[in-house]
Structure formats: C-alpha cells, structure tokens
Length: 431
Ligand code: SDX
Image (cartoon, rainbow, N blue to C red; front, side):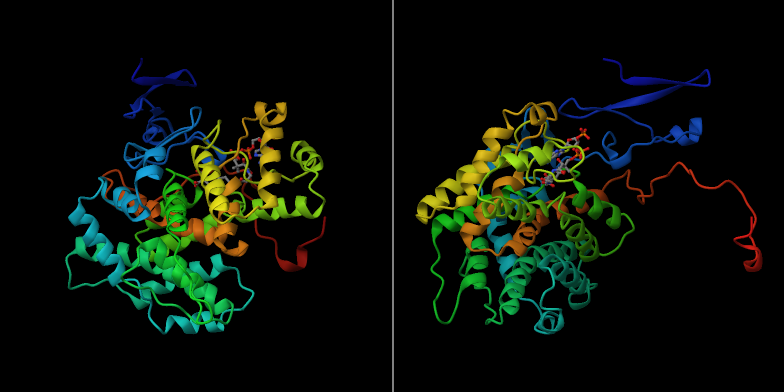
C-alpha cells in the first residue's frame, strides 16, 4: 500500500504522508497542509479526523472490538478489577502485586475530602443535578489540594491521580447522602474500592448496608466497561482543555461537563427515562420505534447507535449478562428490562436500524444495572464519570507527554459579512 497521498489543487500537486497505526489504521497527515498549500480541511464533528496518536485504547467499529493497552475488554471484565484496570490504563501495564498494593494504599490514603467541602453541598440548590455538582466540586479540589511543590513532579502527578480516583467516588456518595438529608458515611480502608462506594452510598444508622460480593463484582465490571473509549467527546474535552496547560482538576471538570450530555454519557439516564415513558404508556414499543425512524421527529432511541461501533457495542453485551445475573441474585424482576429486550429484538431486525447500523451501546442496559444497585436515576451519569476517570487521566497524561503536543486551536471557514463600515447610531435602520 502507498505510504503517501497525492493532493492536486489548482493543478499543483502536494504529497501528504500516510501514518499507519499498529493495528493497520491509516491516516493522511495534513499537519503541513496550511503551510504548504494554504488550505485547511473541514470535518464537522471530527467524524473523519484523528486528533492524536494514542497507545491506550483500540476500537474497531465494524467488528465491535475494544482493547485497553492491547487487552480485550472481555478479558478485563472477566479477570480484572476496576482498580487494576485503572492502573493498567494510567501506567500502561498490569500491576505486580506490590504495585497494586501500593496503588490501593494510595487510594485509601487520599479517600477523604476536606470537611469544608461539605459547605459547598449544603449551599448548593437542593434540586441541582449531581453532574453539575460533581463538575464544580472537582474544580474546587485544586484549591483544597494544590500541587505539592516540594515533591518531585512524577510523585505530585501520581498523588493527584490517586486523589481524583478516590475522592470522586467519595464526593459522589457524599452528594447523594447530603441530598437526602442523611448522615455522610466515610470510606473505610479495610474495604475494596467498589465495596467502599456501596457502603458509603447506602449504609444507614437504622439499617447497616450488608456488602454482597456479587454486587461488588458487578460494580467492578460496570466501571471496567466505562474506563476508557479512545477519543470520545468527553475525553477530547479533557485533552483540549488540558492542552492549555490548566491543572488536571480543571481538565477533568471539563470532561465531566461534556459527559453530562444526553448524546454522550447522559444517555444512560435518558435511556431509563425513555423506558419508563414506554412503561407508563402501557409498554407498547411500536410508537417509539416509529418515532425513532421518523425524520420529522427529533426523538431518538436512546442507548442505540454509536459514532464508532457500527455493530454491537461489546460493552452492551457484557452489561446485559451482568444485569441478568444481578437481578437473578436479588430475585428481582425489572419490567424495564423486558421493554429494553423487546426494543432490541425489534430494532435489530428493522431495516432502518440495520441500514443505519444502529445497535445497543453501553448505555442501553447500564441503567437497569444501576437501578438494581439502588442508584438514583439522576446519578447514573455520575457513575459513568467515576468509571471514565482513569481513562481521562491516562489520556491527559499521554497528551502532556506527547512530543507532538500542541495547544488545541481548530481553524474555520468564514461565511459572514465581507468588509463593511461602522454605521453611527442615528443612521441605523434607514434604508
Ligand atoms: C456514548 O464516542 C464514544 O465512544 C461514546 C461512548 C463512550 O464510551 O465514551 O461510547 C459513550 O456516548 C454512547 C452513545 C450514547 N448516546 C446515545 O445512546 C444517544 C442516542 N444515539 C445517538 O444520538 C447517536 O447514535 C450518537 C450520537 C451516539 C452517534 O451519532 P452520530 O455518529 O453523530 O450519527 P448521526 O447523529 O449523524 O446519525 C446518523 C444517522 C442519522 O439518520 P440520517 O439523518 O443519516 O438518516 O443515524 C440516525 C440519525 O438520525 N440515528 C438514529 C439514532 N442514532 C443515529 N436514529 C434513531 N435513533 C438513534 N439512536
């Protein structure tokens, strides 16, 4: 195959190098196009544009492949834990026992949040969405935990990573308890990361929360499946904001805000709200399938479709299996699962969805699993954010270490007025 592309503009030829990735992906390098040919490219939504080279996550959309540092998501979901997968993403290798122990101890050491942060929660509007609270709290962490200037750079960064991974989970549980006017539960160093979260969320002086190992395992799998996903919208936000060399907390706060959108991480909440609407309407899915296919109706089948996966999202497959296991363990039946399964059965056979290559994505079943844990719907995207945090951190770290690093500043094609003069106030509006 050719390792260069030939561009001919106004009869002049420009040779553009072709970059080839380790999995054979090919990209035309246009980094000199403006300088050599006076041209830029246009690509709304960056559908066809790569923003960086990355060694963290590989996705192959047509085959539904997802690997982190080369390891298939199916193997990580089966054998790993969320903390171990976080270590793999951030450091590039699975940890030795000693490295895992040190990382876990660091997460415990930094699991508390400054008591003054409770004042934020207590004066935040009670009806505020947890994603808005989380984004604000994470930005505030910079002021409560400024860089430790007396320590070596590498150690400072690793402590900041541990603070974020541990405190985001604590902040989420704290926010939930304060929003209900309940006692805030503190993390305990003798509990694993996921068990700690469930205990902090649901422990009550009236009814102590009994940790169920199957639910803890399911939560590990849920967060492993959300840990990273190459250059998705929120990760691109972290890289873009991070490219201005702001502190990591501010870059992560930008990622949280981007993830909040219903077309992105907010889809897990939007999917459950859609399933509840179908349930309240009597469970008939036909009108909703028809609306999803109607060009004149902006309704979309939430939890369906993906910019990269043009086949089944491998994460949706795994989550669907975990949902059945957890509901079986809890001996619970969720009518929304029946509706979701009927939607999937009909959609995957419908020519509209087949032609548009629309399949269930990670958000289609994840809300049903979160309901089984007892997580409130408005915290579903917070759960996504906790899972995605190690991915954001690893992508930020890779970007600041990238020799090709540049401040992100896209160009545009101007389509406004050509040059015209200022009109004094008393002459405006006169033809
Ligand atoms: C996540 O990028 C990532 O990796 C994200 C993520 C991650 O882990 O970070 O995987 C997490 O965000 C998953 C996606 C969650 N969002 C949803 O479930 C919301 C519903 N889905 C969509 O809105 C949509 O599918 C997107 C946003 C996910 C992807 O859309 P694209 O790639 O921008 O495609 P598009 O909006 O241009 O749609 C292409 C066509 C259009 O029809 P035409 O005008 O070409 O005829 O497909 C149609 C769309 O109308 N379409 C849908 C649809 N999704 C796309 N029609 C009905 N229902 C849908 N869900």
